[in-house]
Length: 525
Image: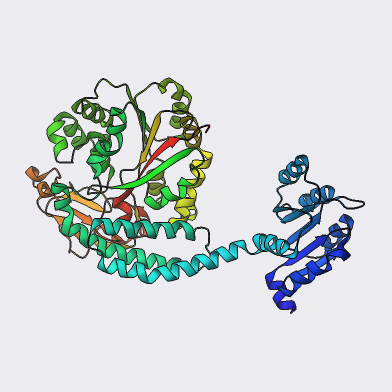
C-alpha cells in the first residue's frame, strides 16, 4: 500500500478539528493518497521541515497560528508547493488575500469527501490525466489520419490534414513526456512526401485556374481590400516566416483582446521572401512583377539586398489599380527591437490611417541565426522549442505592446499573415551550378540546374510556373520534403552548418500552407 500511496501523492492536512475529518481522510487513503494530519499551523510547518509533500490542505480558521499566517510561512519556505485553503468565511477580502498568495484552490465549508477528492486530483493529477487523455485521443486519431494521408487527393483535404497535425503539435507542447513526438513527426514526414507530389502534379493548374485557397498574390484581394472598401481601417501585419503551428501557439495570447477568424493561404513557389512576399504586396505573380516594375526589377537583380525594398511602392500601385489610391497608407518594415520601439512610440500618429502595413522579421531572423549560433540552437532544438521561443518573444517584446494598443482601435481590422513558413531539413542533396547560381538552401536559380524528381521539382520553363528568368535561360530547382541543396565544394562543412536547421524556399506543408487570421478588437479590450 505504501508504494501506491507514494505514487498517487502525499498530502498534508492542517485543521484544528482534524479528528472530525477522519472519514474524509479515509476516503482519500482508500484511493491511494497518503495523508498526514496535523491540528495546527505550527505542526504543519514542522511537518514540512521534516517531510516532503505534494499538496497542503489548510484550514483558514485555526487556534494559534491561523490559516493565512501559515500560508504565508509555507509560501516563504516553498513558493512552488500547492496549497488549497478550506474556510467557513465567504467574505471577499479573504478570497482576495488567498488568491494573492497564489493558492492552488479555495473551498468553502462544509465540504464533502468527493469535493476534497476532486480538488486533490485537480492539483496532483490534472497534468497526468490530461496527458493520458491526449495520448489516448491521438492514438485513436492516428489510424484515421494515416488513412486520410494515403487517400487525400485535393488541396482542401490536405489543408484539413495539416490543420489537425498542427493542432496535435501544439497540444503535445503541453505534454512533452508522452513519448509520441516521434510518431507525430513520422506522420508529418509521410504527409509531406505525398503532399509534395500533389504540388508537382497540380501547381501549374492552381496558378492558371485558381486553387481552393488564395495564393500569395491574391491575399490583398481576398483579405484586405474588402475591408478597405467597406470603410474599415486595416492593419496588415505580415510576420515573415511564420508557420501555421507557430500561429496556433501564439493565438492563445491574443484571444482575450481580439475576436479571431482563421483560415490559410498558400505561398507561391519558391516559398521565399523575394517571391512570395513581393507577390503579397504587389498582388502580382513573380513573372508579372518585371513587366509592371521594370526599374525596380533591374535594381532587385543587380542588388540582392534590395529584393524587398519596393514593397511600399508595390502596395501603392496595387491600391491604385483597385481604385483605392486616395486612401491614407503607411508601410513599415521592422527588423530590430529598436525599430519596433520607435514604431510603437509613433503608433498614435497613424490612428486615422486607412491602411497600416507592417512587416516583422523576427521569426525569419530567428531561423536564419539558428544555423550560425549554438546558443540559439539550444533555445530552438526542435519545432516545439521554436514555438515556445516565438510565444516568449510575443509576451515580452514591443510586439505585445503594439497589439495591446491596436486592441483599443475600434472599427479596425487586423489581418495577420505570413509570406511562407519553414521546415527543419535533414537530407543533403548535391547540386552543381556556376557562379551565378543563387545561394538558397531550399531552392536555386541558375542555368542547367537539375535534380532527381524524388528530391526536387525541376523547372526548365519558368514561364509555365509564372516565374521570371526564362528569357535569360534560367531554370529553378525547388527542394521537396526535408531535402536541402549543397554544392560539392566544401560539402561536409555546409552539411554540418545546415543539417537540422529551419529553412524555406521549398515544397512542404509547413512552408506552403500559411496562416491568415482576421482579428477584431473585443469590446472593452
